Amino acid sequence: MCEFCHKHGEGQKWYLRAENYSDDLLSDLKRRKFIADFFSGAEEHRRRKTNVRTPQPMPWFVRSVLRPYIVSRQKKVHFGQVLPIEDVEKVFGFVGNIVRLPCYCRYINLGTEQRFCYGISMAPQEGEMFKIIKEIDMAYLTGPDTSGLEELTKEEALENFRQYEKEGLCHTVWTFVAPFIGGICNCDRSDCGSMQATVTEGIPSMFRAEYVAEVNPELCNGCRQCMRVCQFGAIGYSAANKKIFTDPLRCYGCGICRASCTKDAIQLHDRASVPVAANLW
Ligand code: SF4
Ligand code: SF4
Image (cartoon, rainbow, N blue to C red):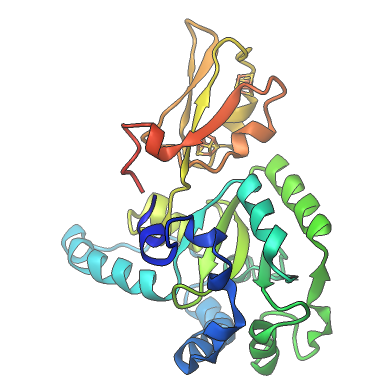
């Protein structure tokens, strides 16, 4: 299990622990301020850095000195983990409220409202999280009119997630000052700042999933549809065997490759059961 499971999960996956979504955690004033600052900072962030895909040159020695500090701070405030759709379904099973929000990263990158992020709360109706959001400058979210925050049923939200899988989007769960969890997003490397920092720049701001993918060569017909959607370059193709293979050292365990496989040839296994990847986060 990842570091957060040990710290915040009490023996289970940290994002499956209902207490970590609780409105009680939002009585912490520092956490409330972080959330308000986070969302109200989007416009400024966009002005300063119009495209997070633009490489930010940083000498290696500066990067190596700053890296531990940045990662440690991110783990305290805003850190994520990849999770497969069956775990998203478990989370939707116990939260009380799901609201679809415009994606922060895509707003910064593209300057448009793209609703790929889902705020979740234990409250049966709008919880404290959404009250905080509605109180701040909503320019990035929906402008002054907050009525556009879309409430969805669990079934509607899950159906959207299934559609995202067909487009190759990877599900990720996020803290807003750990251990409080405020949302689940649907990310790709083109526009997700955290995914770019983690995978491209080597400065992690999310853990890999608790799983690793493996292909059953008996079922694989070598069509390579799964290779198109893997965001992590973890699938290769053997011209000799006419089948794909997965690389456990690169696999983030998102499970998205399964959605494009008509042969049901890819399964996820517990990361702990795959020795070479067991301690790879
Ligand atoms: S999509 Fe399925 S059948 Fe096609 S190459 Fe990938 S694992 Fe094999
Ligand atoms: S091979 Fe791993 S990282 Fe790539 S899509 Fe499949 S589960 Fe995700």
